[in-house]
Length: 233
Image (cartoon, rainbow, N blue to C red; front, side, top):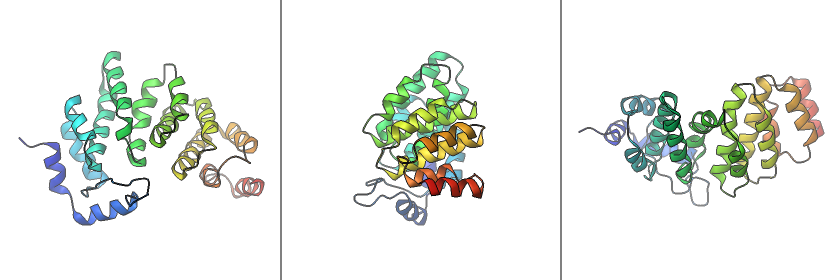
């Protein structure tokens, strides 16, 4: 029987694998150290996943436990689709719990970014969100990134407070990948109508916000406003 890994291996290329290993910083001491790529483009991977959206948790666990990046990505893409199609609260809860149980395997920024909003954010939209604050206060890079990226779902629903509060928790973070995530979510909130709260947040925290986060946050502002915030910094 043809499996999802067979299908992914069939379209993998060494050239793409080499490029991905460089792009996702898999060298010694880098954030993606030890990650293994077989070389499948994101559009091709998503096309394959469409055939396997009904995979059970045990099969998804095997993918998530793999050292191969594209296998873990495939599992997460499938979980997103399963969350969107889940008919019951019980099923949604199972998917959410399974996802968080595997947070240690969601261990690169693209894996977080393809899934956190539509699994964690989606699930928590009408629930207590305090778990996100706990996640932001951990010492685990990817759990912290999940916490802030999950708020993208709330932003799209015109709810901005959690983004601002979790951003504040993460302002002192040392890693560039958190700086970028915070700046990105602040920019998305600004674009969705939270221009005044976001700009007030930047002014109040200008001494603490990392320069990378600031640059991301102000990217879509007018040249005048960009200059204003960079001058403050």
